[in-house]
Structures are given as structure tokens and as C-alpha cells.
Image (cartoon, rainbow, N blue to C red; front, side, top):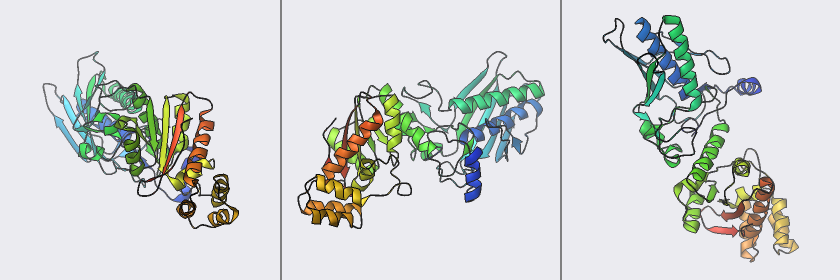
Length: 384
């Protein structure tokens, strides 16, 4: 869910070189597309002609050009017109972005001198309904960086073609309300559609930054709602387990995925009274071993480590040796369960202790729940 909720970091410097090396093609954020559409529409209002393609300048200096997918100029009392719409199809490059191929439209209407730039949410763009986000409640979900990018391009077009720069910009996304159902927006209280996002304008393929930013916004929303207990969950099964255990409201659930470190480091700076971490036994055994990124490509289940934990939990040496040579973490757990050895509890306890170490004394009580693939609790720590 990359560009559906929070912004992506730009493919600049070493990251751009890495993308070139891997052959992955970067793309453009919804904010960049909205800026291109706005620039084209405002130019048409002042000149009568849509620039196609339209070129914009991104925060890091890139100057991409965008072909227009649709355009419309409404003639009013002025010689040229008083309202124009331009649309750009988003290209997310090689990133599996839910907004890839979405049509981003900007409708620009002239306002009286001194009115400034006013933003509106059109169909498919959400509205902020909860505090804790970088926008006020009631505002269209057009993030601060895209707003500034659109303002600067409006000013440039006004200076070039003799306008005042006073406009209303309505951003819409075709089918945006449906697409938004596959993002964090409903949970964050952004209702009615997508967010217009992007801190650099560039979508980095398979970037972690968007997910991590979503986690941070989730913490912000929970704190703003007065939640004192939040849960970082690795997936939907662990979410269901936490709901059954604690009956938490939806906005207290953080879609942690593999990014345990991101949750812990942000909560260290923005504490809540209690944090529950819930996930699969194998994933949380990685946290217990000191890994903060639980993705299979970046950390592995350490069966030798599990063997040592089994000994701590009461296993004899032959069982510990079986654990060390088990095929999977789940097999290691089953071996211990068959002998009455609470390996799951030991993993949960050690994962809790690692989490506390990352929190560095922040006033947060932590407990950990380990589950199997069916969602059955196979290990649990006491809060500490």
C-alpha cells in the first residue's frame, strides 16, 4: 500500500544508482501527478492552451514530463476562461502501488485577487476526519508537500503568463474511493477516497519508507484519539488475535508488518502507556534474537538460538539438539510443545526484552503474543 496513505522517499543519490543497477523503474507519486495536472490546467486558464506534455520541477530537482490523459476548458466571462481541468495517469514504475494507472485530475478555478490558493477534495480524494495527521480535521487529504509543490507551480505559471496566482484547486481521482479501501486511509480516519501524497515526487520501487510512514501516522492518530494501549501486528491473523484478547478499537491497531523496529523507535519518541506486539512465532523469534526487520529477505529464523531458548525453558540436551536441526521455526515449536516445554513463552519473553531495549527507558509497558498460522496463541509474555 505504498502511495495510498503516506509518501515515498525519492530515488536520489545512492538509491537511484541501486535502482539502475537492479533494473527497477521508479515512478511518480500522486502529488507529482496532481502538480502536473494543476500546472497544465492553470496554464490553459491563462493562455487558452494546455501544455502537453507538461513539465514540472520536483523537490530534488528532477524535471519529469507528463502526458495529459484528459483536458477541458470552460469559457466564462473572461476572454480565455474561468475553469480548466487536466488529468494525468499515474505511473508508479515497477512498484506494486495500488494507485498505479489511476487518473489524477486537477480542476483549477480563478479566484478574486488576494484569495490565495485554496484546495478542495473532488471525487475519489479523502477528507481528514480525525486529529493526529499533518492536516487539520475537515481538510482535503492533500498532504503538505504536494500542496507546496502545487502552490509553487501556480506562482510560476502566474509569473510567466500574467496571472494573480489566486486559484481554487480541486483534486480528484477516478475510482479513488474504491482504491482507498485497500489502503490505511479508512483506519486513519481519511474518508471518501485517497490521499494526495509524496515527499519527493518519486515512487521508489518496493520502498519501505511508505509503510514505515504509515506506521508513524497510525501512532499519531491513536495518540490524538487518546488511546493508551496500541498493538503492533504482523498481519490480519494477529490483528484478530489482539482484538479477541484486548478488544481494542480499530485505530489502536498498527499494521506493523515486518517493521518491528519502526514501531518501537517511533513509540520511543512518542510514547503510549502500553504496547502489545503480536505476530507469528517464527517472525517474533527473529525479534527475540535482536532483529528489528522481520522480512525473510533480511533476517532468518536462528534455530541454534531457539535451541538455547529451549534449554532455558527446560528442554533436555537431546530435545535442544532436535530444535537446532528442525526444518522450520514452527517445527521447533511443535517439538517443544510435544514435550511440554514452553518455547513460545520464552520467545515472547525475549522478544519483549528486546523491545524494551529499543525503547530505552521510554515509559511504555510492553507485552508480546506469539501465534501459529491459525491464530492460536502459542506463547505470551507478562507485561513489563
